[in-house]
Length: 112
Length: 113
Image (cartoon, rainbow over all chains, first blue to last red; front, side, top):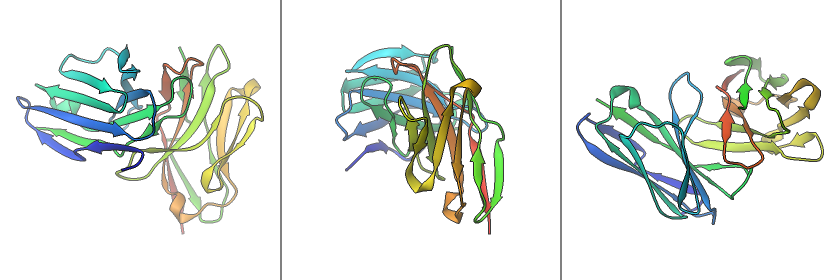
């Protein structure tokens, strides 16, 4: 595997379900990010992790819970989501600092 | 706070014609600037970036962009559009710490044969 991988690629879940999104980067980076991409809205930065420590949480509802066990892996735990949470969730990684981010292919989430 | 404005959510050009996608930013300090491309059902891929130095930056697939501080712009151009250029393009700005990335709303490029 190379670059940034995300699993699953597609996920359909009910509002009472609990699921997790997984991201793995094979680039030796030490910063990882979660973004939400909704139709006709700007890309929304959700969480930032630097060296496994969360440095940004942009007012994300608590039904989204991130976890970063090491610099290569990032999870997004989901529970009691709402239909408006349906979106493409993108993971990215970079070196620390103002460097370009490398994105995974995303997980297309549908909440029913 | 910084922001990024992409004028024109949809741009159509004929194959072989000039591509011009506009990006303006607001920042109180010199930012770092990026252009990304997103093909359907894929993540974002870096096209080019400006950090310091030469203000005309060349990227992949024949694209280039010029940083104009006086105009707070970073427009993306390509002399001759190809069918494979049809995609969504995002301009982004980072503060110097890299802790915040701000993306524009994107411009969908259609290339007409």
